[in-house]
Image (tube, rainbow, N blue to C red; front, side, top):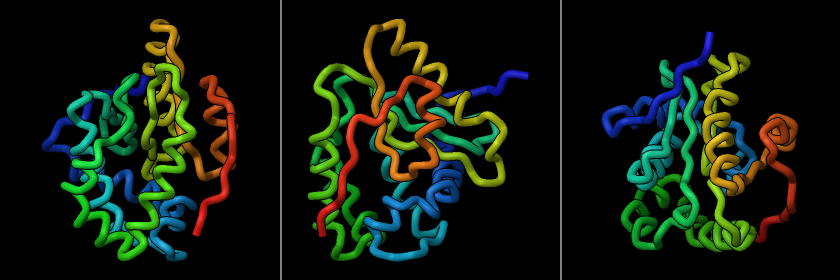
Amino acid sequence: MPIAVTPVAAHEIDTTSASLARAFLDDPMMLYLSGTDELAEADLVPFFRAFQKIQLAHEMTFATEDRGAVAVWAPPGEWRIPFTKVVRHSTVFIKLFGTRFFGNLQVLTDLEKRHPEEPHYYLEFIGTDPAHQGKGYGTALIEPIAARADAEGVGMYLESSKESNVPFYARFGFEVTSTMQHRR
């Protein structure tokens, strides 16, 4: 049976933020940015809530029907988050990252410099609540945009901090184009 994927509505952001938070509890990049070895769901929910609010206007935030997995995409030319929106949500980011927030802005700038210049769909976040992993949710969230990108003749791009995810993404045509060591 096909897995239903639908757009996330504003009133669902708390639910989808919790799913993303559970998916990212062990994410190396989130741990690095926070400067800790362990994160709690409650620490990450406001972060994902803020990012979904920022990206919801693009109407490219999707979730499985049970909201157990979520993908936050940005369309071509719209992946860069305006600094004004970062400032608007800065209290959330400072609460999670503390004084590391300011250094993290440079890390994110370094990541931005690696984005392709040609038009592309940007997969900003994709995560499946661990209770739902192995059900094909990630595939269901990527396939429609992969097909759309192919039909439009544009690429897709993402950053992955888990090497174990690279083979999964390769199934959809993603390739490792570079690796980086973060400053500190």
